[in-house]
Length: 450
Ligand SMILES: [Zn+2]
Image (cartoon, rainbow, N blue to C red):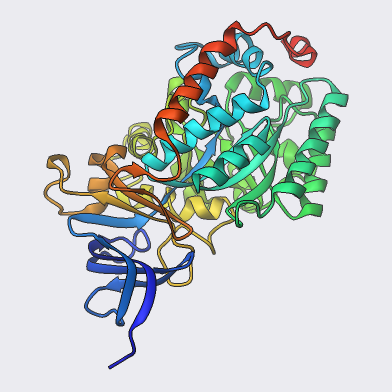
């Protein structure tokens, strides 16, 4: 008989979806040692492993943690503050003036609230772009999540401001790459083409290449700004970016709604990664990204919630369902984006979009142990003909029972272990209430831009 191995966490008796779209393991077992997966597969075929901590997985489904490819976490503070408005008005009249008042501590409180919401909803990795991003990194460290973070760069017609923000973004990369035991990866974060000049974007590209980090930006979100760019430069957004040598496999482009055929082909040619954010796109009525066509061209597409001010949550279960329904409706074809594809986008493909495909996104021996358990003993999840369909079309985030990141239990039996829920909500509520009343002058650059 083989010697008895030891593991830190042993989960047994669950259905396992190790790599989305491949096998479904019934009566499965997962063994976690330190921060990595030591075994995943049939319990009956497992080596003899004992666990320091044993989790009874019967009635549960284990799968890779969800990957949210695009958000602005601290915008939890603006949830519900300006509703049912066009994008430009929403940004210029409410969001930007409020953001100008944000202090580091405010961003920390908003980010902690976002981390709490994500843990409870089964998201284990997210990509964020915002101001005071060091505070987001600290919230991630405390919460125990994994994240790809970018300090935002918003030039807004003031080159000196752009240079300063570029330098801040570079400093952030230098300081926070590998932060929180390696759970934080850094990127550069130019806001978008209409808020950053081509000169500045070329410098961002150069710095990102020098530092060997990715770039997270918004692209082709609003028809109005896409048209303005075309009038000003005579080229579409993606064509312009190609012209300045900006495109590459390390670019994470959020939205990508208003694209020509040629632009889609350019994204595919340069292996640019796309974050599809269906809920926020629908809420702000920006149009529908042609995701099926991008995927047919071979583009890697993940799913994002975008900021909680325009969604109004960080719920990847809701975003997965809407992601599928919107594409079916757009193409008038129910076979578009089946459940397995959507779940793959929210795990494996999301990890690839963030450059983390070797680390997370599937449950494989040697990969980081980012695992979630869903409680399937629920009327709305019975019977289980197809666990993929149940997860995408029937499940909700309150079905998430246990969350493990980097081999550490962040939530067990719905109890969050790393954050004090009451305290996090109270502090965020206080900040959100006080912020609009605060007499901080609107920053000069914002005034100029408005
Ligand atoms: Zn965004």
